[in-house]
Amino acid sequence: MKLLQRQIFLELLKLFGLTVSCLLGLILVGRMLQLRSLFLSQNIGILNILQLFFFLTPFFLLLITPIATMLSVFLTFLRMSTDNELVALKANGVSLYRMLPAPVLFCSLCTLFAFFISFWGLAWGMDMFKTKLYYFAKTHSKFALQPGVFNKEFPGITFYAHQVDNEKGELKFAFVRDDSIKGTSVVVVAPEAEVVSKPQQAEIHVVFHNGRIFRQSGDELNILKFGTYSIKLDLGKLLTGFNFVEQKAKDMPFFRLRDIRKDHGLMPHEDDRFFRKVDTEFYKRLTLPLGCFILGMFAIPIASVFRGLKQQYGLLLAMGLFMVYYTMFSIGVSMGESGTIPPEYGMWAPDILFVFVALFGMRYANLERTPTVVHWLLHLRLPGRKEEAGA
Figure 1 (cartoon, helix red, strand yellow):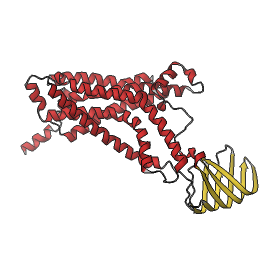
Figure 2 (cartoon, one colour):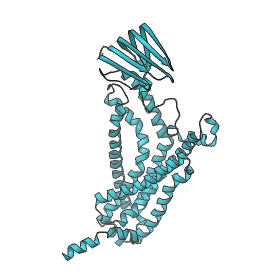
Figure 3 (cartoon, one colour):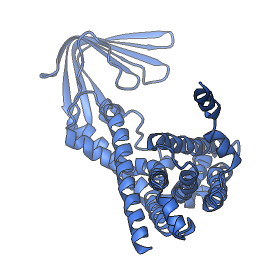
Figure 4 (cartoon, one colour):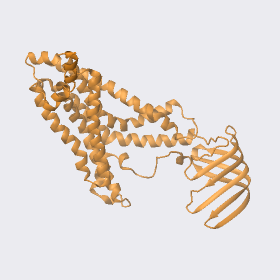
C-alpha cells in the first residue's frame, strides 16, 4: 500500500506541475502584448517584462490551482481506470477508499498552497507589480509620436505633429488639445516644439515655441500669443487601468478585507457598492482555495465512472465540468457585487453543490455502480452502432 500511495502521489505531482506550467504559460503569453501596449514606446526589455509577469503570477495561480488540482486527479485515475489498474487493485481486495490517502494528501497540499496565495501572496504580488510598473514607466518610457497621426495615449489630451524626430525630440507644426479640465477646451498650436523627458520625476515636458493658445470656456474664446509654452505630462497616466491612489478590494490582503468588513469606518468615504465588493472578495479568498480540495475529490468518482474514456475526451470532459463550477462561481461574484443576493450565498453555492456530487459519486464508484444519467450518456451512440452492425 505504501508503494501504491507513493506512485499515485508522484503521478499527481507530475501532472500538477505540467498543468500549472502550461496554463500559466498560456495566460502570461496572452498578457505580454497587452502589458507592452501600456507604454508609448517599446523600450521595456524582456527581463523587465518577465519580472512584471512574476509579480502577476500569484493572481493567476489562485485561479488556475483549482483546475490544475482537478485535472491532475482526474487524469491520474482515468489512466488507472483505462489501463484496468483499478480493476486489478479491486480484484486484490483494495477498495477505492483505500486508494484515497494519496489524493487526499495531494489535494490538501494544493489547498494550503492556494490559501497561502489567497491570504498573503496575492496582495504582495499586486503591490510589487504596480510599484515596478510605475518605476519602468518613469525610467524606460519616452514620448514617441508618429508624424501625421493623432495621439491620444494621455487621457483627455490629443497630440499631433506634421513632422517628428523622436530621436532628437523635435516636432514641426505641432498641435495639442487639452480637454482634461471640465467645461474648458485648450488648443495650443506652434510651428516648432520639443519633447523633454524627466524620467526621475516621472514627467515629460512638451515645450512649444512662438505659437498661440486658443482657450474656450462656454461661449468665451481667448487667444494668446507666446514665445515659449510648456505642457507637463505625468507618465503615471500612461498606465491605463492602474490607479495608484484608489484602493481596490481585489488588491487588498485578506486580513485587511476582514477588518473592513467588521468596521466600515476604516473606509469612511466609500459607498455600499465598495463594501459589497469587499464582502465578495473576502468569501472569494476562502472558497477558491477550498475548491482545490473539493474539485480534486470530485474528480475521483468522475474518472472511475467514465472508465474506458480516451484521455483527450477525458480532458474535454474535465474542462467542461470545471466550466460549470467556474460559471457558477462567476455568477456568484457578479450577483454578490451587485447586491442581488448576499455574497456568501453566491460564493459558497458551487462548493456545496460539488461536495454533494463528490460524496454521491464516491459511493457509486466504490460500489462499481453507474448512475442512470451517466449510463444514458455513455450509450447515446448505441443506436448508431446497432445500425452499423446490422448493415
